Length: 115
Length: 112
Image (cartoon, rainbow over all chains, first blue to last red; front, side, top):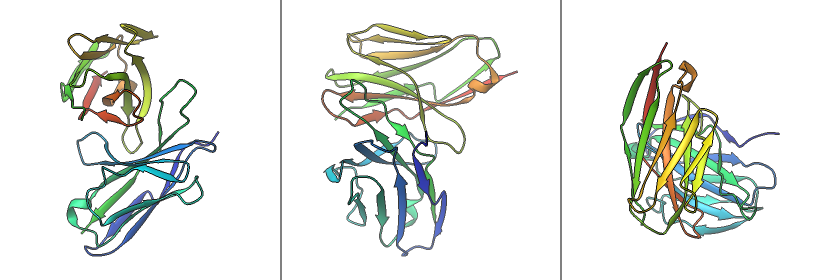
């Protein structure tokens, strides 16, 4: 079946612009995660949804970052007034907890470059 | 929170050799330890995982060992092949949390 998809795959934004990154999780997956991956680093947690509820947003670096998942499926990560330090790959992952597994399925990521 | 250290950052081996990547974690409440492989331009993909009630797990050429007392776990790849070349990440997850903490990654290069 289809895996996690993300769009766009690449995004170039000028500093100060707003961007919206989309994640389509695997159908039926309850949990959805957003991560930020800087060059040469591991994924850093941003936020976590269970269905439409945002249960943890402790990793969002500032109030310029906002995520939503209004119908419990597709999610959007929005970054307002982008800064150069926001340049990174943004990864989305989904999982189906409750079946004795914590496996997360990652999308290919969106590479954001802020100029 | 949890802190995961991963070594080495780069590992270069000849095809057919074994490769070992080591991670340590800080929180004794961690109970789930996945390993991910990330190829260029792709998202991480789970290759093997282990839970805290198991000391070792093997899947063909890949094995993971866990030492809870020392709070470290390792990935072992035997008979390496060029297609094993990628960045490998370890991670640790605390208790009932769904959120793993990742190491910084190891770039494995397998020379033909």
